[in-house]
Image 1 (cartoon, protein in one colour):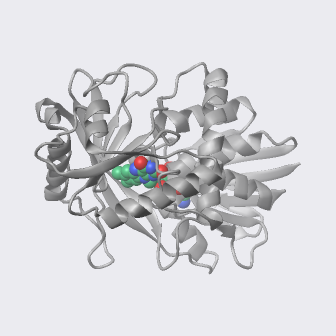
Image 2: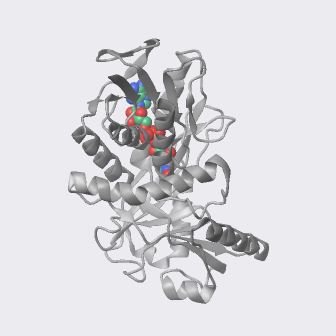
Image 3: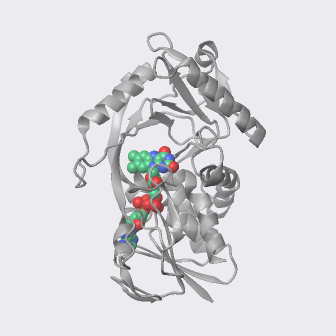
Length: 366
Ligand SMILES: Cc1cc2nc3c(=O)[nH]c(=O)nc-3n(C[C@H](O)[C@H](O)[C@H](O)COP(=O)(O)OP(=O)(O)OC[C@H]3O[C@@H](n4cnc5c(N)ncnc54)[C@H](O)[C@@H]3O)c2cc1C
């Protein structure tokens, strides 16, 4: 039997574990130095910018399309196994087009994207301000100037922690062995992984350790440089839904998101707002900049003024794994190692790209 060892149990490691557990005849072990869904995954907002992204061809588009399609079957599949609901927002993403940042030329490029998506079998709706005001009365279209909005009804948002925990439970059900609190120290030969819990012998190793992947590849003299980009977010409690309770998409404007919590499970009373994008100035550690978080909240309130009445339940930050000098993500066999696969560095789109990552890794393994 082929023994696969996965290092890391964020959204990527957990999705790999579940999807690969569906293949007959594989023995799978997952190690993580923490419990599941900590690190970047525990901080993510779970917004999946697939159809609404400007990627129209090549690997970047294929991965988005594969993931969006797979999530439609994956969520009910996991809910049936775990008998738990996973917050999964099926009301799409609403992107506001603020003026003067977005011009009529940009609107022309949205029309072109709408046509491309139509030909690819997907939908995008372009709304004028009157239509926007009608479907989302929570948005202040009087003091803020918009030239319109894009509604992408087939894009989704989900709770990344709930999903990761469901994947772990379903994979366990399929026989995957999870070892939490166990740190991978390094591969000491091509088939042995040294850990804080002893040596694990495997046939293939998948490094899905996010920011921890760099050290593991460096130890094999094939360093893939993955650096942190900090993101901060806020959990707000309003006590009732913003605008129309029947239409609660994830809203984005100027790269700031207002995300209804527990979508599809219960009526929204709480919202996540985020996220900042903070780089290290000198290549060293990044500390969260409170002013940037304040500006994010201010901007969300300018978009949806009622949020000024909400109370802050918590704020948090996380580190996104971003590859240096190359596009995200990095999914490939580690050069010189036929049995080591890297599935890391998903930067801002790990939740979106997790199912497509599993598909690519599956092809490499089979
Ligand atoms: C504020 C914020 C908002 C975000 N919003 C979105 C969003 O809306 N949509 C989206 O798609 N993405 C979003 N992201 C990005 C997303 O969170 C990441 O791309 C994704 O979580 C990466 O998943 P991962 O499993 O590769 O890494 P991680 O979640 O970081 O998991 C890596 C795991 O590896 C473990 N590990 C590391 N080293 C070792 C070792 N040596 N031994 C054992 N275990 C190890 C860690 O403990 C950790 O559990 C956001 C990120 C942040 C910070």
